Length: 52
Image (cartoon, rainbow, N blue to C red; front, top):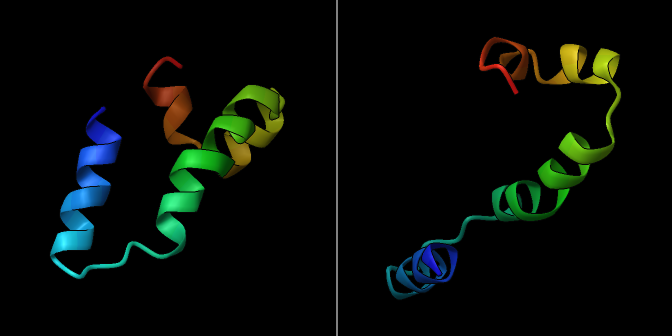
């Protein structure tokens, strides 16, 4: 629900989020689901610190 609200708020403010929206909504979940440990360490080192 919150994601839809933020998209509506951005549209009302005439602000575009560009590829950030695609990265957060599509790419990141696939990366987190399918990347092996070495890939996660290389491309997303913060995930190791947060305990994910």
